[in-house]
Length: 94
Image (cartoon, rainbow, N blue to C red; front, side):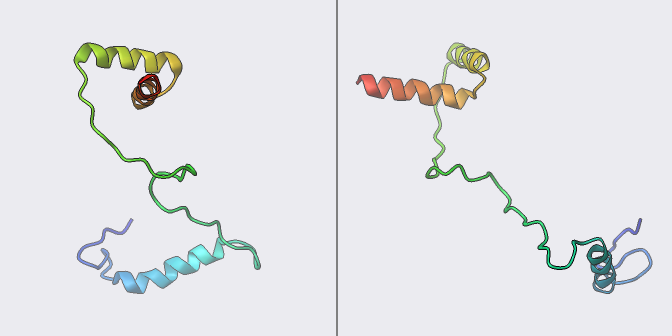
């Protein structure tokens, strides 16, 4: 394994000299002619089809946080989802 140091590997070959050989090797292992390579997904959270939500902070006393965590575990959802459901129910009843 070559260890890079300041743009050079241990054999004093610059990384730009090494790149074409690495790309050649990748091309040799590539797909058949006429096939497109596997598309890459952009980094980050996948799109859900819904408009983006915004994060907000809520302060909970420890006992309420424990109850929310227990409810979330029982339902197999996140604490955030438990809070969203409770807020929706509260707003519907108001």
